[in-house]
Length: 293
Ligand SMILES: Nc1ncnc2c1ncn2[C@@H]1O[C@H](COP(=O)(O)OP(=O)(O)OP(=O)(O)O)[C@@H](O)[C@H]1O
Image 1 (cartoon, rainbow, N blue to C red):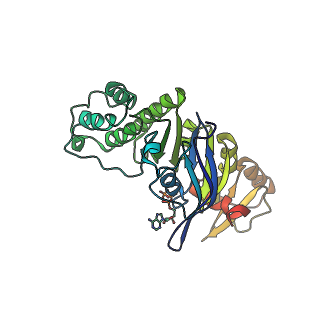
Image 2: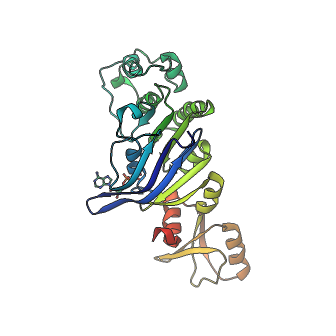
Image 3: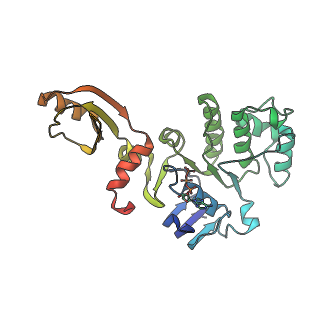
């Protein structure tokens, strides 16, 4: 099968809210795809359509050659939603047993726990796990049945750096064996660490579908902030905004901009340069992207 999942011209509305607007994407075997976008972009809606939790208002969704509405088709996927609740009184091992018994060729319990840094916690009640351990368990369960395709909605939100890395290793191990993953994230560095392909969504539209490197160049903008009575003409300014006495400039090339500023000789003070958050980058870029209008 050359495509494991596909949306064709999918639109999804919630009442008056247009969450997805004519989205067409394909997930091919062996890919690890990052779905990246700011809050409210439509990432969870897209995942929910793929896994059969929601239906499109118009357009079609295909999953493993069938429909996401078919429970037999859904047996081939693994899913960790954005928010999960596991029974607090059950032990880790009991939960893993419960899930793995639904699948004919499940991963061995010890291997699953080891992959997600949960070795030694088998007898611990879920209520006694840390937030990070609970999240790792929730993500591990998506892999329990050796799925062909895994959907992870913000798998590492709220995890510290070490827990995040452990989780990345578990996801990578699955991918290295040929597994296919679609994961959503707000973090460019997370997508960069894991994925080869990134689909950027904003305002319910696909703004970019490309290699991680290409998208990094697209959204890798910096914010330069300074106090200057009069600003000269500067190169590469994507947007400029005044806030009190400060001016905020957004650019792909902060070095070139600062060199031009200094060369010009106009007075300025309080220079600050920082990478923009993805959210800011999206706001800047989507404002200039005709497709997002
Ligand atoms: N059940 C719902 N009822 C009404 N509006 C909804 C519902 N679910 C999502 N929306 C709206 O649809 C849009 C897309 O939401 P969605 O949760 O898919 O975005 P997201 O990219 O996953 O956001 P986040 O990063 O915050 O999780 C938002 O405007 C959201 O408010």
